[in-house]
Structures are given as structure tokens and as C-alpha cells.
Length: 183
Image (cartoon, rainbow, N blue to C red; front, side):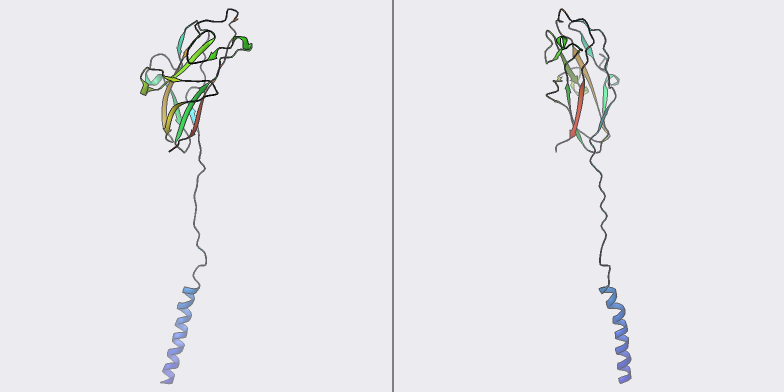
């Protein structure tokens, strides 16, 4: 009987040596994999220049043609990976001689011109005022990644030119500003 108890004791010790270490010696660490992507705010626009040439008093000109069909709109594409809001702003039309600058304003007047934006949802109504670079005007809200948005612009020339304006070319810029959409 002693012999059986001794064999049973040895067997239990051997079994304990196999079972206990596997529980006690389990892996002391666990790896958690974290995957992230940097937030990218980026847009493109199909049109990046508007060369008008000579204009007359009170001319009304359209950035993407005056036929308000979809194919005449410029297209903004959200090329980033986050929803964005897009605002628009413009600058004065400036020649080399600042005496003949045309000021960007809501109403065309002597030496001032106006810019308005339009989107298909507005029909043919150009109601989005493009203000000077000091201000921005909302154009698009919550544009999702890989989504597009159609838009156009209308320029109204001054109703009076400076009598000494020598017709020197003037240039301006319109900037589309994308920011992360606010929830």
C-alpha cells in the first residue's frame, strides 16, 4: 500500500509539474496593435484660372460660362479623409499702379467690383457674396471624403472706371479654404 501511495504521490507531483507551470508561466505580456491615420484636410478644384481679358463698364461675366448647366460648373473634390467645411474669399483687382485698383465689394460702383458664387442648389441665383480676404463666406458644409461639389462665380465690373485708368491688367485671387467640419 505504501508503494501505491508513493507511486500515486510521484504521479501527482509529476502531474502538478505539468499543470501548474502552464498556468503560472502564461505569457507575461499581451500585444495590442493600434492603427491610426493622420487626419488630412485637402481639396482640389477643376478650374484654377479665369482669364477674362478686356471688360467694359457694368459687364457681368460668369466663371464657368453663363449657361447654368452642370457641365459649366467648377467641381470641388474633398481629397482628404475627413468631412470638411469650405469657405471662399477674394481680393481686390490690383494692377501694378495701386491708384487704379478695383475694390472688391458687395455692390459694383466707381472703382469697385463684385463677386458672387453660385451652387446648383441655388438655381441661377448668385447669392453667395465673395468678400475680401479679411472675411470668408461659407460655401459648402460637411463635404465628405471623395465627395464633389459644383459651384460657379459671377463678376460684375465697376459702373465707372477711373478716367486715368490706362487699361493696365489687374489681377485678383479667390481662395477656397477647407477646414474640418464641426459636428
